[in-house]
Length: 474
Image 1 (cartoon, rainbow, N blue to C red):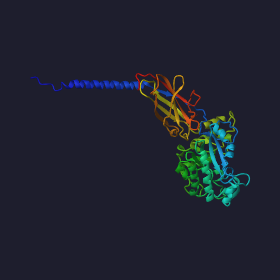
Image 2: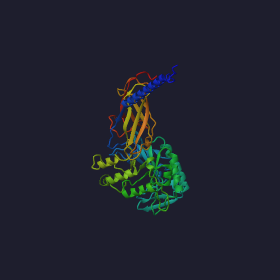
Image 3: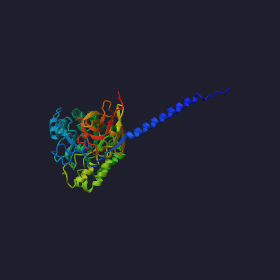
Image 4: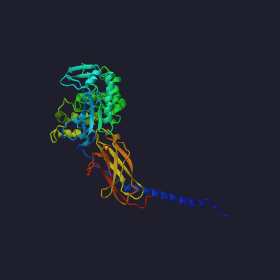
C-alpha cells in the first residue's frame, strides 16, 4: 500500500495562509500609499515686520493723550498718598480718571502697574498719607540728596507693613480678576518703588521683612505676573519676572544681567541676597523702561546694534514707561524703533500644517500644526486658541478649542500639535480651517500670528480639504 503523505492536508492551509498574508501586505501598502498621497503639507509664509501684539512692546504712560508708536500696554503709577487720603477710603475714581483706565480698556490695552510710597521730587514732601505718617510716629527719614527730596518710610515698621497689606489687598480685589492689569511691578519699597535707597540713608530691611511685602502682592494678585527690580532669592523661589529700568544702558544692563546669571549681593553688605535666574525668562516676563540717561538717538540709531544685543540677552517682553512713544512715525529713528519692535516679546507663527486632501470616512480630520516663535520671549499668559471650520462660501460651520499651552512655545523651537477636528456631521463639500488666539476679555481673536495672511480678523487661514463620503460614518 502507498504510504499516506502526511503534508497533503497542510498544503491548502498553507496556501490560504500565504494568500491572507499577501492580501494583508497589499492592503497595508495601499493604505500607506493612500495616506502618503492623500496628505498635504501646507507651508505658511512668515512676516519680518513689527507687530503690535498684546502683552508686549511699548508701554507708555497711561496719562498720555496719544502715542506716535503703536502700543498695546500702558504704564500706571499709583502714589499711596493719592490713593488713600483718609484711612480706609480708597480713591479709585481719581486714579482711574487720571490714568484713563476706561479709555484703555475700551481700546483693548492692558496695564503695567506699580504702587509707590516714595518718589524723590524737587521739594520736601510725603508720598505716604498724613494719617499713616502719624500712626507710624514719623518712623523713617526725610532726605535731600542728588536723587531729590522726599521721605523714606521705615519699611520694618509693623504699622506700615499692616496697612500695606490692606491696601494691596484692596487693589487686588479691584484689579486682580480679569487680566486687565497684566503685569505688576513690585514697587512699595525704596525710591520710585525700585527696591533701593540712597547710600546716605537707611537701607532696606532684611530679606525676611522684604518678603512680607512680596507675599502681600502674591496673595492679592494670584493670577497676575509679578516682576521685581532685581533677582532677589524670593523671586527665584516664586518664579517671578524681573524688570530693568535702565534698558539700553550697557553698564547698568550688564550688571543686571550678571545678577540674573550669577546672583550676588544687593545691598553689598547682604550676602547671597540675589539668586541666579538664567532661565527665569522662560516662565515669567522681563520688562522695564529705557534708560532715562540715554537719548532716543543713542538707543535707536547710533547704538542700535548694542541695544538689540542687550534686549536679546535680557529676553525683554515690554519697554515702558520710558519708550519712544513721542517719536513721530517716519522719523529717521523709525527704522531702529521698528527693529526693536520686531525683536522683543513673542512672535508666534505657524510654520506649516499637515492635513488630508480628502476625507472619505470617519468623524475626525487629523491635523498637525507646527508652531514656532521667532521672538525672544514666550507669550506671558496661556490665552486660549480657537479653530474655525469654514464652508466653501466662508461661513463658519463650527469652532473648536484645542488644548495647548502657548507659553511653552519658546523662541527657536518647533512644536508639533496633533489635533482631531470633529467633522462627523459635515455634508460632502470643500471646507477650510483657520486658527486664532483669543483675548479672554473680549472672547474674540486678539493676537496676530507673524504669518502672511489675507484675512483681516486675526484668524489665520490654514488650508482646505474635501469631504467625499464613501459611506455614512454613522
